[in-house]
Length: 270
Ligand code: ARG
Image 1 (cartoon, rainbow, N blue to C red):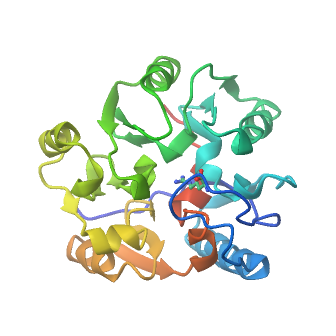
Image 2 (cartoon, rainbow, N blue to C red):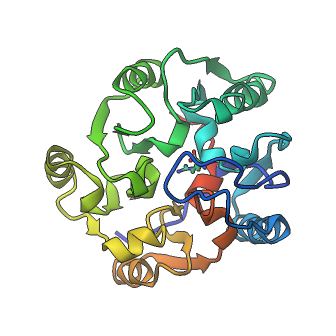
C-alpha cells in the first residue's frame, strides 16, 4: 500500500517563558544557559513546517512560571474527542494540567480531570486500536487504567528503564496505524517481548539516534518531522517509504524534549 498523509489537528504552545530553572530529567541542567529567543525561532520553524504540510495548528497561551508548558504533548491525551487531562508527577509542572484541560473544556470537549498520574502523550501513544502506555518514571499503572477506561482503549503497559528516555515518546514513535519504531534499550525485557510480538516489523533505532531524540517525531502517515541530528532514523524511514523532514530544536532539547514533545494531537474521530 502506498503511503498517504492524513492532515491532523494539533495544539502547540509558544516557548515565550521557556527556561531551564529546575531539573526533573537527566537532560535538564539549570547551570547551562538557554537562549529563549532561539527556542522561539526554532519552535516557529516547527509551526511553519506543520502548517506547510496542511495540518491545522492551534495555540494555547503560554503562562509565566511554567517553562515546560511548551511541551504540549504532555498537556492531555485526546482520542475520539474525549480529553483525558494530565496530572504531573512533579510539583513544578502541576499547574499545566488544569491550564490545558481548560483550553479543551472551554471549546466544548468532553474532559476528564484525572485522579492518578499520567503525563499526556508523553506516555500515552495511540497506535491503531491500542493505547501504548509508558511507566516507570512518570505515568503510573493506576494512571494507565484510568486512561484506558476514559478513552475506551485497551492499554499496553510498557516499562521504561533508562532515565534518559523517561517518557514513552522519547523511546518509541507511532509512524502509522500499526507501525512503530523504538529503541529497545529503553524498555525492560518484558516490554521488549511485548513490542516484538505486537510489531515484528518495527524499525529498531540505535542508541545514538535515540539520544538525538530521533524517536520524538511527528508522523502524518507519510511525512515524518524529526530532529535533524537523527540522521540514522531519517535514512531508515526513507527506506520504508516515509519522507523524513529534519528540523533543529536544540534549545528545547535542553529541557529534555523535541518535535513530538512540542505537539499534542487532537483526535476528534473515533
Ligand atoms: N522538561 C520536561 C519534563 O521533564 C520535558 C517534557 C518533554 N515532553 C515529552 N513529551 N517527552 O517533564
